[in-house]
Length: 205
Ligand code: AMP
Image 1 (cartoon, rainbow, N blue to C red):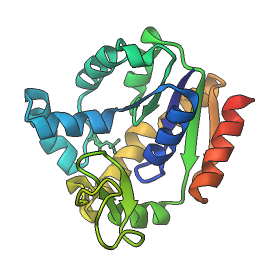
Image 2 (cartoon, rainbow, N blue to C red; image 1 turned 45 degrees about the vertical axis):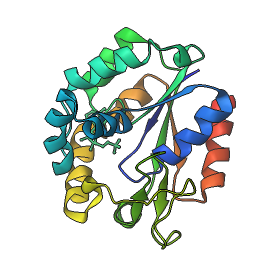
Image 3 (cartoon, rainbow, N blue to C red; image 1 turned 180 degrees about the vertical axis):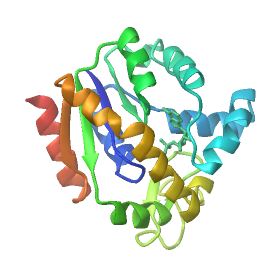
């Protein structure tokens, strides 16, 4: 099974992707996580992407496509994969079409005002990548024991730019995939398990 999770920053793509990938035994491919790993390791790619990411801009399509092509060749992608945060432009979607067919595109819908409060309260684990909301984890500790941190690009000013970039570059993908008959919109503004159940129902149809 090959899936794409679409949606603005803060829609819950990462949280839902972990659950669905585990349930269906497919690889969870987050291009954002891959870029953050490159930044942590201080690679050439990571250093080149850092400034763009911290300003809330997109990393160039050719860089992302190179990463994705390598990633889907790996063994854990044999049963399929779930893209979280990719594609983010029409050019990326067109390039993906030449690489692999896709079964379903899930579009998570959440009102803008909820996105800002979700993202600005988001705290991440530097080790396992889990995401929490500060209101539920005021001690800033991950279940794995590490101290949570706030992503540089989750600070409010950058979040606003990420939303502008989403509207301009990524939102057109909704129509793109609707025209291909692949799009399923799901209300992402509900309890995590309710959203998960709705996604599963859509995929299993
Ligand atoms: P995310 O973790 O998906 O919110 O991604 C964090 C940041 O990484 C984005 O704001 C972009 O700067 C960059 N990024 C992640 N995925 C892509 C992509 N598919 N195309 C371009 N930039 C990306």
